[in-house]
Length: 536
Image (cartoon, rainbow, N blue to C red; front, side, top):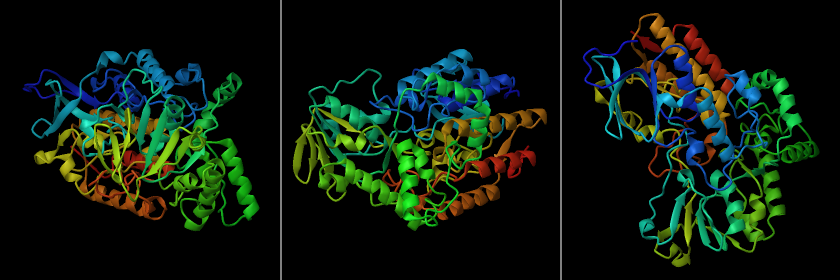
């Protein structure tokens, strides 16, 4: 594809890719293999995306290592050796760097280069892109590989800037080790990053105070070193594992009991929950097929976990605070290593801020109910502005200069989670309206990358220069995403799936539920000559 002949920009590319995480790296590799000229712009100093930024103590993937990996290269998946059942952040980052080196990706990546704006030029059918460093480029296609959980959500606590000690956000952790030995530490939040980091920090700190607004369900990881014979067995039949995963709702190959929790006896239910608890990990959600469809069925699993919390935590008052009252898995189910046990330590305190929230932060510490608790360190484990935050940070303007954030003011609107009407030649990898965060992200990323690459190749082969989602197709897709979600228990609690963790963000369930039917739809759209898109 050729660029605008009289463009004042210094460089024109077939595609500009924003972000050098797993999505951006594979997108670059795929487009280069098809002979396209692509460039990646990354705000960090290295590859890895979420695993570059999230370096907090205990950061670890909740999908098992053998599945949380690329499958586009059989040589890569055969040769890479994982050390643990659930890989920790440093190992996943090493893997990302290995991939970048193996496929020589860095020569087409600009690091320390955030994107400030991207505007569609209707005259030349291209995107005008400006970096935060002031560089201007153009591209026929702009591909957002900005990640679903990459825009840190920092609450606007009054007086936060006055705090005299160190303050860290789990999603923007420093690259150096942080030593909490002998320090008084306060951590705000009890989501996944807090569940992972609290047991580690508690082992170092003089005292750790946890501020909790809403308790979360957590199931044990039972993490362990990954024995060579286990890896060899998986690698001998990797294709079968990947095929099984593709058939599962969340793209992960753990079994789902094809029965209702209500059609078996109490003893059979208990035995299944105990077996899943002993196995560890997210497979607990697959104990029965209707846990996210039927509230009565869900109650049986939720009460099982509540009983486990009460049995693990010695102090009844603390156990009661840690016991969720919501539907199990309507929020992201956490996978923990010693989380509940940590509250039995004498140097750990739990403060409930659901009824009496944090009033302010003062130079000495945190004020709740008129009482100041002094700290040397405050940690914000307050999560992310999920799915839309990273996109809305960039000034993206489509036809007639309409900003994407303005179009999405009442909630994100996409077709297939890949494109938005009024924004030609703009693709979003694992965008809102796609399965994304409800799945194993690596296969989901690969499916999106391959669909986008094939689409761009189709345009080139047919001498087409522009593709845009139609408004009717987008409206129908948004309605379908909402309709499927409404048939489940997912929207019943205030989760980040709905944007409920960000003040003022519209309450819209953002991901599409069901990986296999989604893939079938994407394939059918492409096979039909890109049904629902206008090509010109």
